[in-house]
Length: 398
Image (cartoon, rainbow, N blue to C red):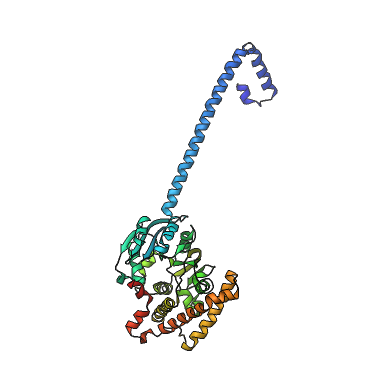
C-alpha cells in the first residue's frame, strides 16, 4: 500500500508489488468470496445511489424554496397600484372592464379597486360588489372631475394611482404593466396615460378623430418635459399639457403635492400643465391600450365641445378663437375627410357611405364647431344658459 501510494500505478515496482500480493492471497480468490465482495460493492452502490437521489430531491426542494423566496422578494419590490373608477350608470361596459383589470399580468401588484359612485340607478353597484370593488358613494350634485378623483386618491393606499373611466376597457393583460413602466423607469415622470382605440360600434367621425387626430391615439410613446425641450414647449404648450384620465396613472408622492384642480372639466390637462411647469415629466404610454369611444349625436357633441372650450378658455387664456363664419365650411371639409376615411376603412362604395353618413357627419361637425365657438364666449352667456349646454350638468341630472 505504501509503495502504491508513492509510485505511479503502472510503474515496474508497483506492478511487482501488486503481483506479489495477488500470489500471496490467490487461494482466497474463490467464487464465494467474489459473491461476497460484489455483494458488498452492490450494497455500497445502492446506498450511494439512494443518497444521491435524496440529495437530488433536497436540491430540487431548495430550488423551489429559493424560487418562492425570490418571488416573494419581487412581490415586495413590485410597484403597488390602486385602480380608481368614478361611476354613474355604467353597467354597459363595467363588467368587461373589471374582468380585464382582474386578468392583468406582470410584476405590478394590484392592491385594490375603489369606485366613487354618484347616484347610479342601474346595475352598476351590483357589478361593483360582484367584483369585490370598494365603493364610496356621493350625491350626484357633489360630483366633479377633479374633486371626485381627489376623493378616490385620498382613500387609496397604492404607490401608483391608476384612474379609469367606467367605459374604458383594457385591451389586453399587459395594459397596467405598460402604463406604469415610464414611471418606474424615470422618477421624474409624475404621470402617464394610455393609448385609446375605438370600439367596434364607433361611428366614422369619432373613429377617425381617435386614430388620426387625437394625441391619445398615436402609436408612438412620448415623454413630455418642459426642461429638456424648452424651445418646443414654448412653441407647442398644448402638446405638453395634454393628458387623459380615461386611462391614466399618477405617482402618489406627486399627487400629494399637486392634486387635481377641483374644476368641472379638463382636470387632467390642468394637472399636467401644473406638473410640467413644476419641473416634472409626463408620459404617453402607447403600448398601454384601452377601448374607448363614444357614439354621441350632434346635440351631445355640441355640449361636449362647448364644455371643453369653456374649460380651455378658463385654464389657458391664449386658447385660439374659432370664427363663426368658418363653422359650416370647416364642418363640411372635415366631414368629407371622414367619409373618405370610412370608405377606405370599410371598403364600402361611395354611394353606401354617403347615403348612410354624409348628413350625420356634416351635422356632427357643425355641432362641434358651433359648440366650440359658443364655449369660447360662454362668459357672455347667462349662467342658466351655460348650464343648459354643460354636458356635466346634464349627467348630474340623470
